Amino acid sequence: MKSPLFFFAALTALSVPAARVSAHEGHNKAPGESGAGPLTGPVTLTATAEKNLGLKTEAAELRTLEKTVAILGNVELDPSRVAAIASRISGRITRLTVKEGDRVAEGDFLLEVESRQIGDPPPKLQFKSPIAATVYEQPIFTGDSVEPNARLLTLADLSELYLVGRLYEGQAAQVKKGQTVRIRAEAYPEDQFTGTVEGYTPRLDPETRTLGVRVRVANPDQKLLPNMRATLQIVTAQADTVITVPLSAVLGESGNLFVFVQDDKDPHTFTRTPVVVGQRDDRYAEVIEGVLPGANVVTVGNYQLQYVAPTPPKEAPAAATAATKAPAAKPADDGHKH
Image 1 (tube, helix red, strand yellow):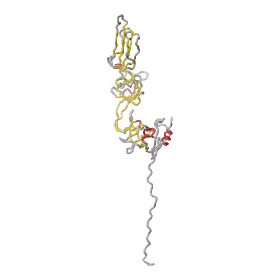
Image 2: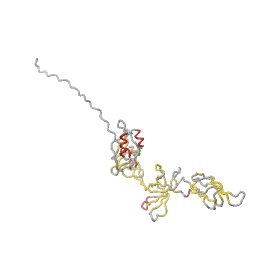
Image 3: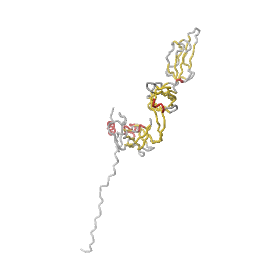
Image 4: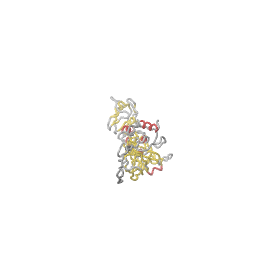
């Protein structure tokens, strides 16, 4: 892994004429960690440098911040959207047209069981899907023996799921049915899902002193799957409308926080600007001082940007060096003739 000094050296070595610099992306420390001291002053980048850094900006805006309770949760099936396929007769499977992971529509043919009862031909029982779903479990194969009431297939509609997490006893009073929940799954860190608090377990766990909370989430693309882990941000209240920037825009340590503001006249120039930050939620931070609404702040690539050498000020035009000669003075007339 490379230290911030590497980036400074690399960026300086790749500088281009007219005090414009080029940069490479990558870093190995989180904002606020010790390392090479960040440089100050405006920085002007080439288009190539911005692309290498992957710079992204977002405007500071007036927003209503939200108070949230954060918990961890697991994805689970909605029991009302699960169907079990079982046989009422003993026999063997003669046809099987699906496998785990297949999606089926309501009424699709699934399998056929030939009865052990004597007949020519023996009686056969066909099974069709009672719901539009995904084949969640398939423990049987063609030719397997079947006993009455044995589960042959499990079908699950994954278009809506539950996320189940646990609240500490002191958090329980803040969470109510119907509250909005923002969800981020470990499998899809860039995606945000939205759910709704639907209910709770009827009792506290006596050992952990926690209360189970159930959140319903729409899953039309079926990205979420049972047993995935996720972070749940339950929105419990709203605060006043304030100037905000994304959390990713703020760098530094407490008492020494800053953002990079894009110049409104030259979009390739960025200025490190100290800020005073107030309340936060899981997405935005209130800016009390330092940034006005409409200012574009860097949200991606700002960590590397703090180690780019500042752009030197332009030199003033050279002053004229040739002195202007004054005309020779005429001798004074004293009134005498020579």
